[in-house]
Amino acid sequence: MRVSVGDASLTNILARQGADLRGQVQRAAQEVATGRHTDIGKHLRGDFSPLLAIDASLARLAAFKSTAADAAFQVAAQQASIQGLSQLASGISTALLGARDVATPAQIDTLAADARGRLASAVGLLNVQASGRAVFSGQATGTPPLGPVEDMLAALETAAAGATTAGQVAAAVTTWFNDPLGFASFYRGEVALTDVPVAPGETAEISTTAMDPAIRDTLAGLAMAALLDRGVLAADRGERARLAVTAGQELMRSEDARIALAARIGAVEAQIESARTRNGAEETALGILRSETGSVDPYEAATRLETFRAQLESLYLVTARVSRLSLTEYLR
Image (cartoon, rainbow, N blue to C red; front, side, top):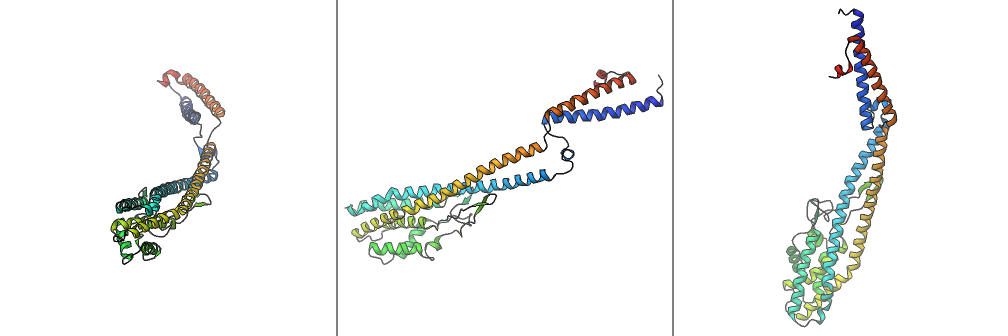
């Protein structure tokens, strides 16, 4: 059969219409399946400012999420260390206070060795790291705040050289821990970290370092007793017992400071957790809003899909009559 020019033109028109309808069917089917517009720009009429504002807010919340998580990890590690420090101190303070009633040098020696071990453990707790960062070193996060415990005891032994009474040794230890050339020089960290942003307009204080008075006083109490294990006042059993008692008193005296420090860190933990909860809720709300910005009405999308399908079926019928093809043959 000979095809006229008019027939060829009609065939081209039908082909173009078929391609256009197939594209619309595909887009409508995708919108029904995903629940989102395939052309967000067209849906928003070219105004992307609401979407950009939501994305900017989500990006800020992602940054807060990261800093808040890091801060939470740091203060949790600090809290665990302070609790461990308190347990080390309370586990020996009563025994040291009872040294005045101890009659044998061997028992004093046992307490001294225990104190030395606890001092080493305390230094280990303060040198703890979270995610590879020292949590008590202030801004020097790559450096443990304290050196070897033996170096500390050697410095204290030098500071107490010539002391012949428990009072003199205790005074030398106290002075060393408060002296800028003593413990402050032994401290390897730097100044405290600045406040960390954890939520819009909110920061958390994570400024605790190994220079905190509660920590210094606890170390001083343990160090007084630990010096006995290095032979301090070896010639005077009575003074050794008095130094042990003084060490116990120092540990008892610093207990309130440790409790206050733990409470302060706990308050920061609660603040950070509250901020993280609020950030999470806001992130969820913004995520829903962003999804709704590009979402389609399921009923309207399904109606359009059926309309386009019906139009495509009708077009195939017309095309089949023109070209003597069936829809089944076309789909094959």
